[in-house]
Figure 1 (cartoon, rainbow, N blue to C red):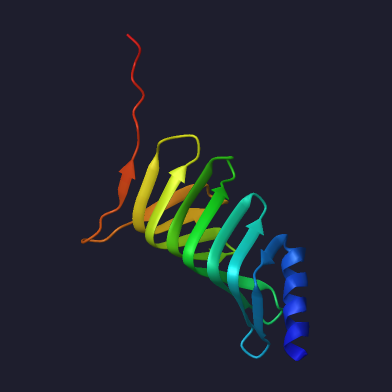
Figure 2: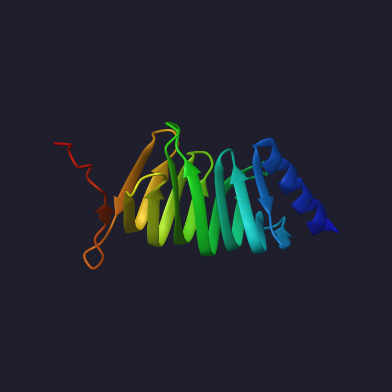
Length: 154
């Protein structure tokens, strides 16, 4: 019963911050301040949507979310402050609500909606407030940007 109350409290805190979370199962630990979500996880924030097999919500001492981590077949759709829309996939996604920043990790593919532009890398940072995407690669797997040039009419 104690865990059920803790999970309900987390859901109320998330709703106050306008983040909606759904899953087949919620497992909460008031001691560790972590909630684990399992099965068909969906997280919605404004125009952003994230789907995964599992997710973890980490809370501070005031029970406010400080970090969300999604793993397992992660798919996402993100809208930046300038209304550019991106969708893609990654092995893992971390969302930091205080920074409004996504960290996309492992086999990341991001496509700008309505365009043929895509980005591939091992680590991509997306900032809502600054409106940037930072792509990081390494020596074995460099970051890759693919874009289509418009042909000039002659």
